[in-house]
Image (cartoon, rainbow over all chains, first blue to last red; front, side, top):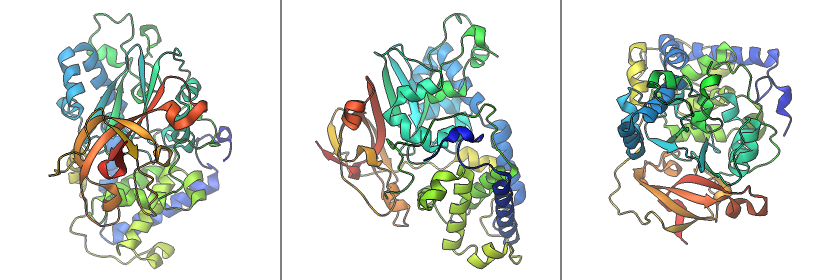
Length: 212
Length: 218
């Protein structure tokens, strides 16, 4: 279609004029809906605040770190991910039917939604632009290794790459492998090694030396 | 529908090019578009399947070349007018007369509970599942003009059932106001080489979730 490298925002044009047009369009829509009694702007504020400040990938990192440190939890996560994740208080919208995918030395899982932008909001928050982009959605199923290479991820040729296309209401969370050199670490410290991309499958968990 | 959204396996969409800073929102309107879309969904006039179909029914150039929050906004305008909540004239004018609150208007105090509850889509199905884990199944050559969640790239291919999830709302029906019509949902595994031929990368597999009526025994 076109080369996205020219676009700071990955997908779509980001010229000032278009932003202005959308600012006006959304503002007009919100005004109409408010006047007609269909929305309460304070509710809109609260929704935004939820995904800006409370629901994001730190939720998922807590799930992963718990799975690394608590074998019983890991088993419950395999058996009924929705219930296990709810133990940590993470429930609700776009996380109603969770599935956990455990990476292993011979198996790497990667998640996509080729048909729209399905993503496990309750544990990862809102998806990044690239996850919703035609580039990722078209290529993840056909050439996952080439996609992974663009994220700086290289896998041995014999590793099984399993791509999960979220075509129904099941939402997939990748449980990356626990990094070496973290024996004895507490869950809270381990969670700092769990990146968002490692839970989508486009990255690994950080090594102890690389934690920010 | 064979729309612009059915992207699996397509070519020519460029590099992934993740942003360096990855702001959650790139402008205030994106945040408002998210909040307004979710708040309108709570009114209960449409479901998530109809929302998805409104988005994938946008013209190809708009679907493929605008940001996702613009796609959401345009689809929301479609849904609001289709369901008689806002008129095309009001949208064009950007104004509307004041009205009393909708009985299901989402209150700020209810947002946390509504988001934490979500909208589960599993439903009881009385019929026994037709397929079991390990069965080989072929996806049907379904090309409806309306909504479906069977991606084009798996049509007519043989996969293995690797999980059975019980009953779930059928989007093909629910998106068009024809009821939830729940069916058994399965996860299928396809070998990369079967889907992509000689071009396939080694040791790759693709999993999809598929409703029973998408499948036949292979």
